[in-house]
Image 1: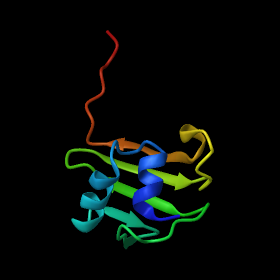
Image 2: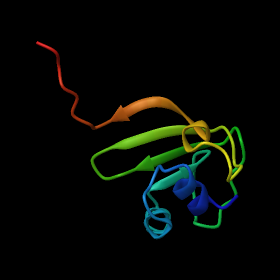
Image 3: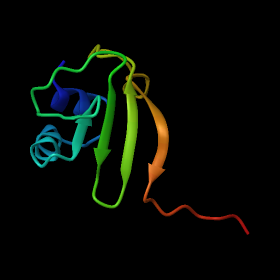
Image 4: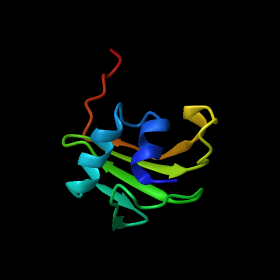
Length: 88
């Protein structure tokens, strides 16, 4: 499955055009290499997304378009750069 389509169907990004823009800007790595919108992704691939102030690391679990979006990936590292509230 194409990288931009996977990012959209898995709901990691809201629109496929946003996924294309991220990839074209070099802010998506697939298995440590810059991913282009047409890069093929398969189960087991590692994807790193740089959203500016946040970075997200996920592992591809499924590329079936009929799969539940949450089951298509697994977060492998917590988001870095995000502000987390601390309980008082």
